[in-house]
Length: 362
Length: 268
Image (cartoon, rainbow over all chains, first blue to last red; front, side, top):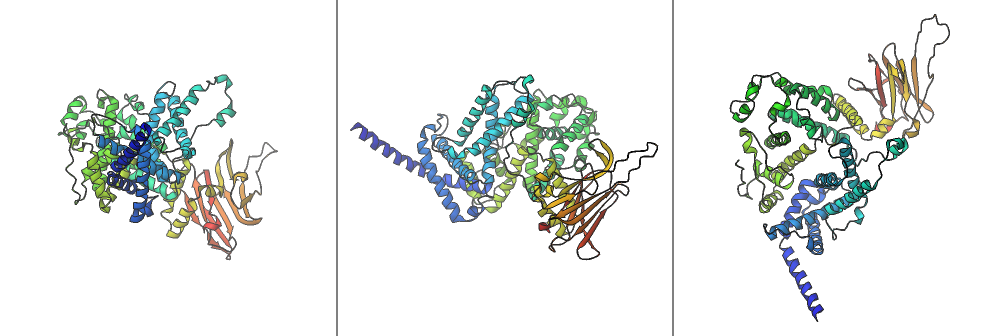
């Protein structure tokens, strides 16, 4: 009798839960529509333009979301500081987004895999870096992390059929793959230098996982045009030349602390180094880059007092001992405060904000 | 530091620049919370949006194409800014860009054919010949030579045969070393001679004679890509003598390594 009562209670709870979920339909529907229009338009173009088809896709997604969420109800986050319904809606939306991504990836849609990589590459990379055994910060360690990251996504794509949203989130699945790879690495015995075999090296070459296939000539041209536009905007609108220089330099390297090691270089030396690095990774040739960087180069010969406007008291006070110097002669370190990494982060963000404002105005 | 708060989103009005920025930062980017900006830039600070505010913006976005377009543009820019240079172009992609750039000054038909030709990079590479003009190759100095790629990996109808591999001067040590090499290469399709390529060190010139293939299409385009420096040279072959023959000549070339690409017949 007690069991029957329990089963009845569960059924009732399930019905009540479905009612509660149904109240979120408008929320989920709006959010999914906006997401499709903004991020997956290329692959779901027909659907996003055809109202009926779009509604049908959304309807199916939401119904699956309800079912999945019920099976994963124990993973619903709880935070007494936050509104329970707010947490619930966000959790539901994340499930619906997983279902949408899964559909796109299973259908081999490029935008799905790209968005999936965009959302999760940094968290997965951090997870690998945190858990992988080895000396952090070395080039070898960074390469290893990058390779494992690529392999994680590669395996994910290969074994996507094994994933069930009813069992967990896409991110958890990615982490479990990364975990396996990390364990494999840890279990592997170290190869001594004397045992090095060129043949082995060839077989165990670095892992590359292309997020997308080779770009078409049109896409390449588009990337090249975008790079030109971005460079022009950053150089002309980005702000102080040393900040622009550092931000451009960090764009050429993933390892941000590198630049702080160059703090004794003068701005002119750093400029030359940046040009050199940039030539290797840019879509433009040296000649074209030289032309684009001309305004920045011109600034190197100007005195700091001419570059910093009188209304910027904070910068003038910070650099008051160097105002009569030419920018190119000054070492990078004079522009850093107590925390150079924070300075670089701030400069990057500031330039991003300024340029984006310009993009919106255009 | 004062951070700007978003005004209540009015569904009937278009989104402001600030609303768009706040929406993107809250929903798509992990914007650091403690950013130190100069006094001049403090207006760049925007607070994160609450779920309800995001929902209001999205309710507007699904109905308003103008705002959707604006947000798409700003969002694409924002994501690209952070991902920019993560995917550096390969040497081949850079070469492709050089070709596309050089094609901009050509007639629209040639431009279109080149763009179409470049769509299959492997096929493009398969139809190329290495040209060494008065330069060093595998330790040999001052040679002018035409070399085809490894035929095993080729996916092309072209085959090439060499008339003379090399001219070696041996014998009397008192004679001045005089090298008059006129390297020729014959290109065939199905055993039929179609091409004759000559690289002449003396005149710093490459001459190509070509027969029309299967009476289809127009004359092929030839691309000469300098690997060391300079812009790619695009040549549409000119008809000579009779209807079946074309000839092109590229003069005044600098010493160096070039790649000569021949437009496949199905592209014409």
